[in-house]
Every structure is written in C-alpha cells, then in structure tokens.
Length: 296
Image 1 (tube, rainbow, N blue to C red):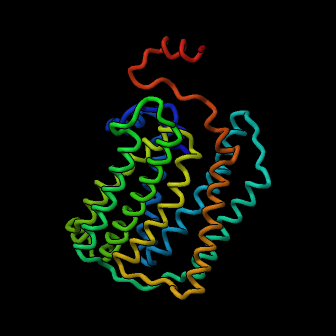
Image 2: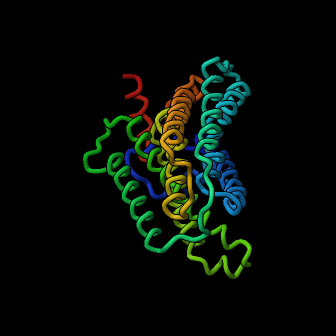
C-alpha cells in the first residue's frame, strides 16, 4: 500500500528509467520498499524448506485482503470513512478459502534444489519476452497519449506479476545455498540475478502502480505472481502436484474461486475510492496548462 501511495502522483506518458529514484524522495514509498525487502528475508527462509508451488501462493494471495483492510484503516485515519461492505468480506473469504482448497487438492511436494542451466535460460528468456511485450503495449510505437490508463496499468501489472514469479524462483535457487556459508552465497550466480531481476521488477512495479488505477494492475500482481511461480516450480525444480482428472477439475474450480475473489476485491470501493485523487501533471508538464485543461 505504501508503494502505491507513493507512486500514484507520478503518472508518466512514457517509460522512465529514473522513476524509482524519483519515488525514493517520498518517505512513504521508501517505507513500502523496506517492507518488501523484509518480506524477501521471510520468503527466502520459507523457500528453503518448502516447495515454490506451495510457498508463493501462501505468501501472495492474502496480500490483497490485507491491503483492503489497510486502505480502510488509512481512509478512516485521514477522515474519509469508508465502510467495508458484505461483498468485500465475502470476496476475501472466498479468496482465502479458494487458495487453501487449491493447495489441499494440489498438495505440492518434492522437487530438487537446483535446476539445469538450459531450463533457467529458457525461463529467463520467456519472462523477458513477456515484459518487453507488456512495455510495447504500454509505451511502444503504437502508444499515444489517449491510450487507456487502465490498459497500461493492466499490461504492466501482468508483466510485474510474472516477473515476481521469476524472482521467487531465483530466491528458491539461492535459498539452497544458505547452509553452505557466506562464500557459497557470494559465488552463486543466483545472488546477482536476484539483484538485477529484483531491481528491474521493482521499476516495472512502480510504473504499473503509477500508470493507472489499482483495480487494473492489482489482479496481475495477485494472480500471476503465484501462478507463474508455481509453474516455474514444476518446470525448474521438478515439484509435483496431484494430476488426476478429479484433482485437476477441483484445482481449476478452486482457482476460479480465487480469481473471482481477487477481481471482486480489486474493484472494491475501498480500493477504487483510494484512487479518486487525480494524479499530478507528468514531469515537465506546465502546471498552468494542466490547470487550464482541467477546467475544460
């Protein structure tokens, strides 16, 4: 939530490689970044002992429900009283129950500590291709100022979710070296890939949050992060899930419940209402021209 509050006034018409440094001037965004880094510490500890397909959904899916309550509390503190409606609670319950049932049916298990280099190259190139495609949709040659803010936010949110899934897979690889000492960690390629991929994904997430309403970007964050991480767990680390016909049908049904819950929470009036303050003018945009256009 802190990162979103820091980024919402920094809408950009194009891709800005310095956006993270601009956001770093805002204490609220730095607080969100510090919380994210702390989350990485817990994540690497969890992935050391559990399969990626199990840990990542548990880490990610409760975020939107928790954020809903945080937004509610924030709005109450600043004097804008927003009531949590019954549909919000039902959506949060459905999402939590859905992910619990999915994990119970899928029962992720097994896996190897390291993946072959060829598999890592393939996973990295596919992730990079998806990110480049999302950037082309949001800021490419066909992009013009009239392009929907929601479309940009959705494309960047989906790319960010998939990228965070890849980052989680790299963390899983790095976690296997934790018991080997500092020298083994420093000599592991996964540490340096994590630094680069994590920084790039943080920049991508900042653009997704600044591009448009949270209701457009949040589903990509919340759904595609654990989904892509789970698929990478199966592909890279050889993890196993129950794959019988009845199991797959049940897993698909519970995923549908999770997706419906995420969609409902993303469009909650608590989150949509938080975005009501219009973003400030883009960098270099004359303030007086912005005011004149607003009057029209």
